[in-house]
Length: 605
Image (cartoon, rainbow, N blue to C red):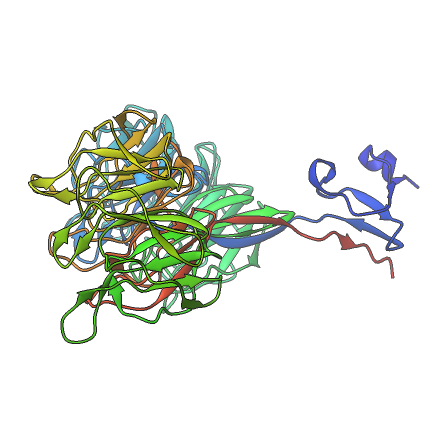
């Protein structure tokens, strides 16, 4: 009889504890002498929440992997779109606009060498386009215009098969320049899924059927059916290892099936029933997004020895006052929120009251020396600063310092202003932008714990509503508004003396909030994306280079004040909701986490 060492090339290790860290190897058997058991770390598959896409839509073309993919085209209700969004494994950002018709479409290839073809825009389409990771260019047309086809391969060796123009069985192959007809599929149908490569392809499903066929680059062969007949638009992977998520029978479904090259088996369901979604990646690292009912969600499929928990918001304790324009600082478990626009009903007034948060509930803090709203805050609960803002409707230059129980007057800023942004700590902080006579400001002022000094000016004058993060020597400000362009997409980074242009937010936003203890941990929250529109729930995160989406807030809101904490652990409270009504709710943010699963005991009984 062969031994484990002969079969695997590994000895059974004798250890006093479970393997962990760099010592952990999936599938390796070891003996834990403390537990008196043979054990192993076993990889399991599960879906977890990914960052929301920027716009809810369906029937988008997709290509790439879980950590580098694109979706292009699709529909938002009855409107077709030419937009492209890119996913980096953490969040979505805006990509290049399609070159041709806005339409429903199918996709294949990679983020930097993508392909879309066919689709629908009030008629069947024959267009194809190529993507280089930045821009789309027109390619040669399909020979047969169609929609709801199977599509797979790479940009220079792709296949599109079957679909609807009526219902067709036609297969076409793309060589990077032109499309040529191949052999027909065995079962003509629309709403099918496609995966694999030109010489090892797979198609399945359709309107009310469970058929599966494999392609060898020349011929199609019928193989074992799926377990559940359905529309199968979101197939991804290879001919020998593919996943189909969601779909439609007589209604949208959550069912997910995996193909191993021979048979289909049911695996974990996606979180909510959906069809016309888009899938990409592999059976160990996959991606499913959007779909009908039109939604913005993203789900990641991982086979791993760890549990991946997506970023999410959870309800916290309510504050005591319905306010907006508050002055905030601190962390998720030790935060301060003070002042703001109090709504006694009717009307509103500035106030001096403050509240402290301990990670679950708010309690009264010390009152500020004077009423204040619409200013900036920075620092921690026991050493924080609020600066500028308004008393009534008059912009002021005063600042107050907090030691965790009481307030003292700080130095006066050189320029009185409201709607400015703050970042840093009490002894090394800064504010920038804002609004004060005669209008929107560009000035930056630095604080050393006692006095303010003017520093480099912003490139764009803006009211920022405390949408900033980082430190005095490495800060960032983003979004906001000015009279020339109303709401802004631009962000700027600060090096301690001067500002330089950074990459834009994906959505132009004003009256948004922000926070982050360093530039790469910065988040932009809510705000208004229309000139006179309601608050939004959108969240974007900065990775030090680009802005990508993150989990949306539960409540749309604007005029929030600074986020306390950062992209790993943060807090927001109050603001104005989608009905432009001041609210008392609090939400806590937790970034994506990965936790190693406990080793499994091997039972020989």
